[in-house]
Image 1 (cartoon, rainbow, N blue to C red):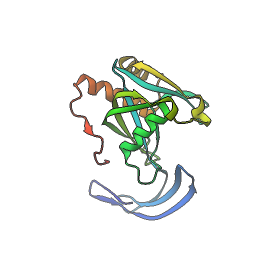
Image 2 (tube, rainbow, N blue to C red):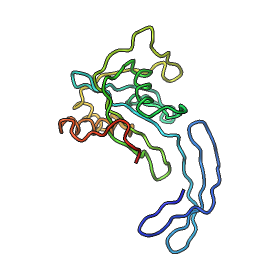
Image 3 (cartoon, one colour):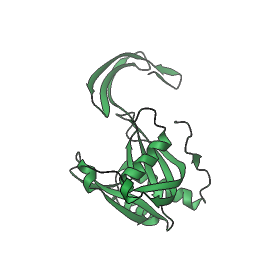
Image 4 (cartoon, one colour):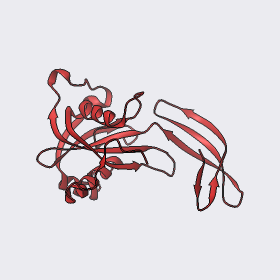
Length: 202
């Protein structure tokens, strides 16, 4: 991986993997800086993720409440998951997560926003979709949730209320904040400017 900015090529002269897990790895790159200095940069290489801001016919966002161990508490989130299924297109992954975590099927899927969650130390990208024309997954075909997801709570929140929650610090998950704010803006613009669900990644 080499980058360029302001005429300088940030060439990687060496890379060492410090840790490899299922979701991410930690690497150290030796990178050439402007002026010729070589510096070390530690960062997380992430498999990527998709999230879904599902909006029902009453203008309510489908949010979830889920326990997150690094924080030691339950937080507000979107239905979301890793892009770790081989050969699965991102829109299909988003629809799968919506079904698994919220028991919902979407008749319409648009691209809402792309978010680099923390570019100072990770290359993680979350693609967030807007799902509409919702219907329920039949009870006998619902995903069996386990571990943290076993106690996952699905809550429908008026989109404007969700915006207020984000601005008040009640919603802190970056994908959820971005999804809620982007959906509210898109709605206020009459849904103009939404990208196709299969648009290229940035």
